[in-house]
Image 1: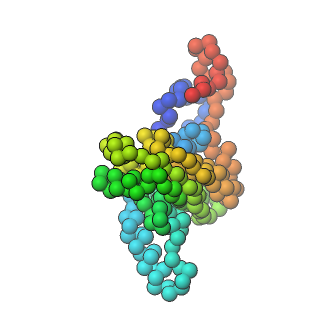
Image 2: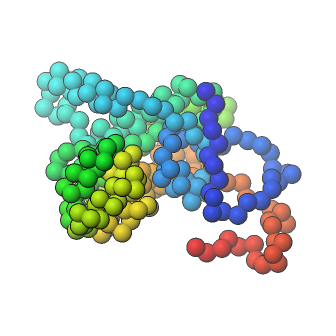
Image 3: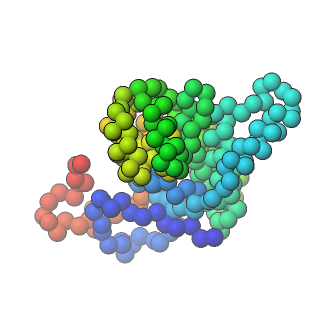
Length: 262
């Protein structure tokens, strides 16, 4: 299966291809179609392509819980952080097996923990509404699992490593009215996202605070990614977009070539 090159940021200025730039596939392959994860990578100027995978997450977790219970060991139960890490790993491995090889593959999964219960994607209006009424004026913990598979060829520096970690941070929700909850759910945004909310969308005004890496709330911790890449001998700067030489920047407006502030 051929990965899709991630779409360019619609808000970014476009420029024609550099005649001296060699065509290449991005090294990083994201095993996700998450708009939040892709936007985070684009904002950090990290080149990537995507190969989303569709797995039966409930079946994967149920099998893991059964194995833990069968072991008879009191410490074998999967913590919330372990569960999202397991799903991230399965996604990364699935994308690796379906790709043409040669990539560093990143899988991710996120869930919100509230009162010891993990909250994934609501999927329905009724469930999203009930969850927001339970979350308002409360603080939960958002867990984002990250799993990296180094599928590069050995001559290209590949290590064959497969490793991961979970970033967790506290999220405090505002005291919303029923009217606000109904209006938010009506946008459709919370139905298909972990925990039923996004920090970088309609729900932004409803998040009073984040204690931890805010990117982890969106589903991809850049500091954690940097650390995982370092484990396989890659600097995150090696994944940055190739910059055009100064003379090739579009200065048709006569202004500075520096990016516009937002």
